[in-house]
Image (cartoon, rainbow, N blue to C red; front, side):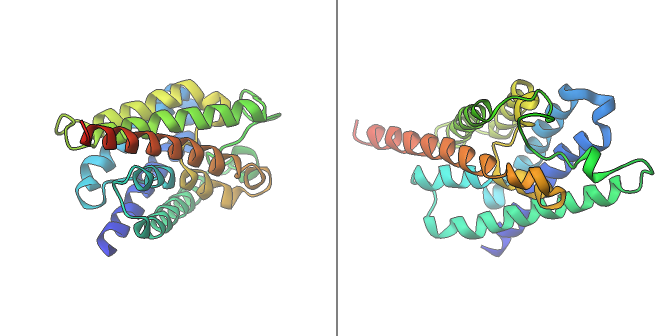
Length: 229
């Protein structure tokens, strides 16, 4: 378990450092398309680099999906989530240290890649839009992950499928919520930004977990039915 926790923390660090780091340090140069690719490529890197150790969940919602699908024991969930949150917080701290080296950087103004919604946040979509997007996007994301990593899936392509799916999700939803689909990814930046980012955090915990739970339960039912055919 200690090896798995280290892998989950490091993998989540890669996700947040690449993804949020691209938004904070390079966002004005690469735009939303570049940020989307940074998040997607980070998953590809972590999946192929660390997947053999822990499965490279990098996301409490993904871990919940695995538990509810019956492919992981519930006792493993808390250590996984703790490692994921630790990795996200560490990556956010490093991004903040780097960004603070620029004279005109302001945490309050420039942020740290935090998620949000409503007036003053990107497309200014309302709470309902944020909840629907995060629920649906996480459901689809976890469904792809569970399908791509099952035993009868084509070998060697899971990391690519998952990374491309995350990039596609960002291409759809960056302007809505900044895209969470991952409570750990949301918690790291919000912890440092505080204020509205922390106040909005419940959305990026509740909606992704609900979407992942549905994906996990449906995947578990499909496996159970297949076993009885």
